[in-house]
Length: 256
Ligand code: NAD
Image (cartoon, rainbow, N blue to C red; front, side):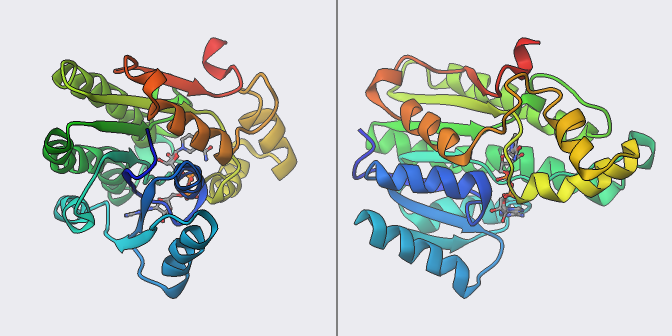
């Protein structure tokens, strides 16, 4: 079902997006990697995936904070059977000190980009007679933590947008779902450890154990491979009637 399909994964030169791209390519999809940079390493990642999987992998630069570049990514790819909206950033700060530029960037990259890519991709999916949209939201799309107002707002927005698009495509061979990861040890999470240490006055070890994994009853990070596997499942025939849902991959966080 995934084999031979074209999959575009936004924000996929690192972390979860890269893990999702690798799993989709292993399942036979031709993947389009993306970020806002255009370095040799970015293109080398695509070449490596092509070589390992025998599929066609490409890297296309586009800045997901800009609506026209989001749409241009889909147009440049030329096809989009599977769309994974994954690009995302974080900033940790109390709301009364939250920098306006950080607020705007988080809303643009984490939420508005999904509107632009879905708007551009849906006509292609309708033409092809098949489509899968997977929006990488977060446990913070279903619940909140202090100091993450922009991120929590954007991720709740993504979950809401997912439900709306699922209803708009309900009678078509297209599904739209969200995946809500708990903590995954990626560069994004690494980067927020120092700020969280400052907010709570804790050591690195205590932030990992008592702040991050405190919310995750399994006491383990989820992995990028597990998120890739969940994405491949949502693209399978078994998942054809799964639409408009938010699937948690969070070690029990949202069961608390
Ligand atoms: P990451 O920092 O490793 O990856 C983020 C990706 O987005 C990178 O490829 C980066 O280049 C890209 N990106 C950032 N700004 C961009 C822009 N303007 N245009 C295009 N690409 C851009 O982080 P990650 O943890 O892999 O996060 C991926 C997604 O998963 C995010 O949406 C994040 O909110 C979500 N998420 C992560 C966790 C976690 O614990 N790591 C948990 C829940 C949800």
